[in-house]
Length: 237
Image (cartoon, rainbow, N blue to C red; front, side):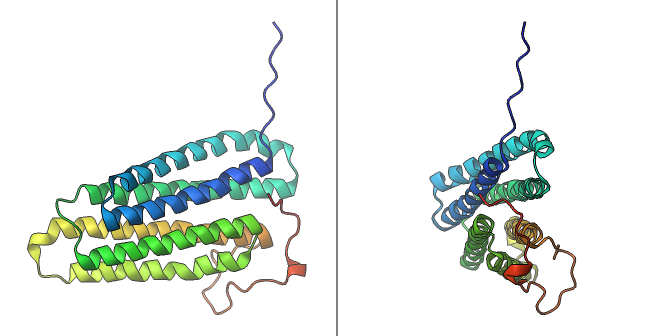
């Protein structure tokens, strides 16, 4: 019996398009989570869970296809494939975190108090905008979008601190279980922001070949290099 030849690996552009789609799925998860917090919509809750499952599926596909694909590409394409791998890992984690918030919210025995609802909705909106910017930055190799994402992450940190301060300083002991759940939700948003910030930093690495992840925090840290100095060997989908 004649042996069947293995199917050729998907091209770099195909995997890049998959990861670009995953960025939009992550954005949809944040959008639907905001709808769930704001309107208690059961459809929104289901949509958040569906987004999490879709990101899991996408991560498995990238994980399965990259090993064979990376052996048959140029150095520039290999760099892009590694960026795709890093992207999908962070996006899958963002899906897990948004889903965990939805599940915790559904399990609350009471509705969110007004201040908590306001701050968690604000965190959703920031996360959604960050993921949209990541998508645009990856699509067009626009480092201004990447820089905006990195510089916006502290807004999520500040909102998280606001929620923690309000609950840890509260004297209303009967709300202890409620407070613990809300603090875990705020922390999940803060961690999702960290993962999104990672995506912005990875864009710098992909486009300019430099890592900004461990650079000292100083003014101009995310200053863009001139177009003539940027790497031009990346593959644009």
